[in-house]
Length: 309
Image (cartoon, rainbow, N blue to C red):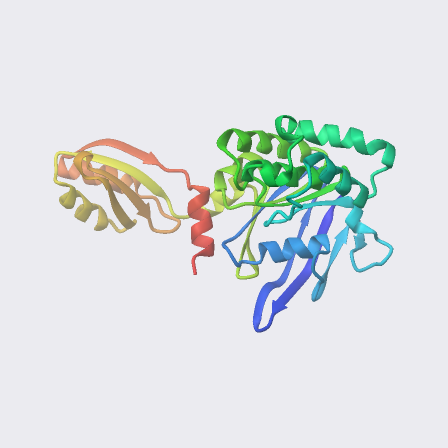
């Protein structure tokens, strides 16, 4: 089930939390929704789920506006909020039964759905415990189970791997990837390797505005206007080499990474390459160039450059 966001706006007093943004998410796609704290991610997700109202703009789910009283869009959505709200005094199975009934799952199918969610979310060993007795990681699994109990066509997951250990994170990533083959998934996270491992496309929001939208590969290509090279040079002092590199007209910045090995990161001027100039410099100075390697732009660097205030 597709989602279309059209000119969505939300303000809190003088602050625009979401500023006239538009994007869409297709069925069978996992969208990574990124941004620093306060960027507008959670506000946008809450409007998509109907948790808070829309101030301006529209959200269309399966072609129908969420403002249409006949759209009944909430039944198609599973939502895991950033702060996972759970009834800590309830046993896991009772809680999932309660959630299934709230979501309108047929009574005859509830026990089967609970068994499926217990297995899918790795809760078998803990299933007879009260939620308050669980670790943070297992509480997060219960939150995922309640989001999926009614087999929704859309999943909105706000920081789904918070509190999970590395093994649990790998399992949940695989689960999200598998779910994304047939469902529409919006995933918010601060763990950037998780985005690359899980998501088909990345959308970055900052101060309520969309600042990037594309696959990880597309975003890297867009950011690679500034070439970054790993350079290792012998037969001179690090300061002498750094000064000579900085003097090249294609070089924007030189960073000494390892003094004992004369290892540098050299950033070129936008849309220019420094490889030939560095090679010529070493020939002219009779220095030995032992390494000249282009560095792939990291997603962390792209995120930082787009969201730095």
